[in-house]
Image (cartoon, rainbow, N blue to C red):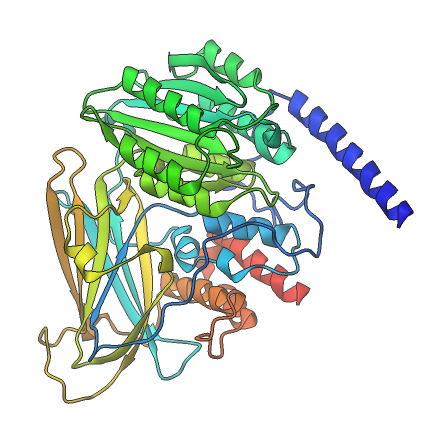
Length: 513
């Protein structure tokens, strides 16, 4: 026992030495663009602060799989949508760091589905959204079908988007001292400042917090030396006055407020708040009150970092949701690049506020339905109808996908919508006028097929993997082997780095048993 304790202490000292050395390397660049070459196991060697074979220590919002719903009792399904892929990035981290047990609550079907790009139809010139629907047999239950309901927003050239006032609120407390946290953040921000998509009309501010709150840079133009110097000077120490940091960041954002522009706080943290406002409820109430203040809307997005158990996902998710922003998890350099560079427009800008969806099934054709995922985003019928309900925000060039497992029947119930199987109602607010908007979409026999598209085959494999990892009571005959075999037949996957990576993760899980 004494020998084990000595080895543990010695290992801790070595980790601290390497962490200090990594923090001193301030000017490194990102690794090769993932689109250039596929790394079969990216990130595995980067994570050094986990014990192989352990259960993930993260804290997640408990979720229970949505049940099968009989349409004769309730034909409506409503949920909020947003831009969030954090849980997939975290799941990838868990697999790559060789956790033997992955908590079911760490697996979010919607985050997994929405992480990837699909060949969806794009909106028309005068439309905000385009709908895409496909209905195919369920591979894990021969009695059921899977309906994919997706909608996309139009791509937008950055030149046509309003000016941005971005305030990066950076946690530099002692808990951020590991290579997977502040070192990654510094490298990501340096790359963003030097190579990012910010324009001459955009400004960037930096607010830091630990024991004290500082504003090293306020309203600097993109690429400025002051921004780079401020990032290079960051180091971790002290406690975590996150609440005070948020107050200062919102204050700076409103001081530099751009009328009709994109005003946003970008919080980067491992979420270990321990001074001042710290409880999830207090933080949520504070942030909700900051969404629109003195007639000036300012949104909050959260970039989570870190690989230790102090990463409290539920709090991060709550902050982003109440801040009208999105939640991303930066598990490695490539993900930081993806969020801050590749998806900058859809992450930073908003084209639709309070986006919520309601699917009404026709009892004449559909006997039961079950929504896969979105358990934490469900809305009551009353909440869907209420214009004041706070829902998710969507940026340009983003697609939202939802899968329903449905069972058909030839009953005697009267049709509620002709020969259509279901109706999709999408409600949102225009971000400029704040006016309510509504779009309708119907699906029927014309959307059914026994031959899946390449996109649908991939989505089925994502869903099947999630069912197995969650050990869902609805998993039927779902298996990782079949999910991987299906993906390996798709030529399109070979051209997509992220989809190749997902196939590699499934293979890793299978090998691990």
